[in-house]
Each structure stands twice: as structure tokens, then as C-alpha cells.
Length: 165
Image (tube, rainbow, N blue to C red; front, side, top):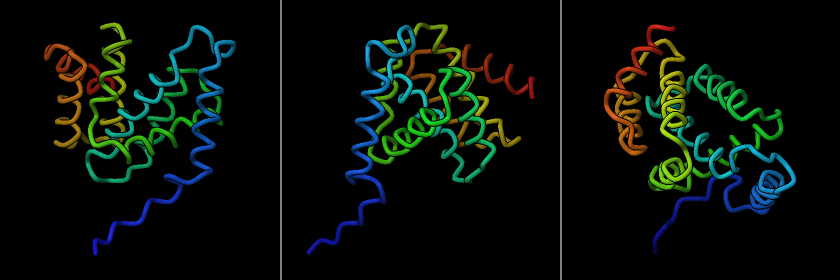
């Protein structure tokens, strides 16, 4: 008999499903938030930023707070919408086996300039705790490749964020 690991709390539960439905009905309603990025793109962006917080295997509150501030500024979200977005992004990362679904959405909908802005946000999260871990650097390098940004943008953005600290 195979013993499967327990399902993490909230994943697959009715309350989580209800939160997901509520989030998408609120944020995909054509009469609400017109002109803003679709909820799927906000979710993909949040997931990529959160993945950088996990790359160094250290639970740094300052990195999470940086993600919150960046998402709030980028998408002009209120506290409740931001909490929902972060919870869904955490769940999406737990359930995902690859970052490809997130980067595919970015590639389909973001301009090159928006991709460079995202890259800058990724670097800001990585440098938030005052150190750049080799795993953070590797992840951001991989993400830059996956969203089709040239290596020059990767280096230039990294140096600009590092110097601005």
C-alpha cells in the first residue's frame, strides 16, 4: 500500500475553492478594474516574485514584505485583494511543477518594457535582505531567459538595483 502525503491545509478544501472563485469573479468582472492587468497576469507576477523569496531556502520576512509592497504599487490593490492574490499565488506555486505556465502568460501579454519592470522587481526581492544568494541569482537568470530578455538586460538591471540599495 502506498502512503501518500497529506494534502496541505487549505489546498483542495472547499474554503480555498470558494476564495479562488471569489477572487476571479471579483477581478475578472468586465465592469470592475477595466484597463488593469487580468487576474491571471497578476497571479503569474505574484507567483514569480514569491518564488524568488523561496530560492535561498531562508524565510525572510523582509523579502515577503518587499513582494507585498511591489504588488501593491504595481497593481494598486487594496489589502483584501492583495491577501487573496498572495494566498492564491502560494497555492499555485505549491500545485505547480514548473514555472513555465507563469512565464508563458508573461510572454503572451507583457511588452518588453513590462518584462524589464518585472525583472527589476525580481531583483528588488532578491536584494531585499541585503544579500544575493547564488540560488536567487540562478533563478532570476532562468526567469529572464524564460521571459525572453537578453542577458544584457539581466546584468544591467541587476547592477542598477544593487547600486540603488
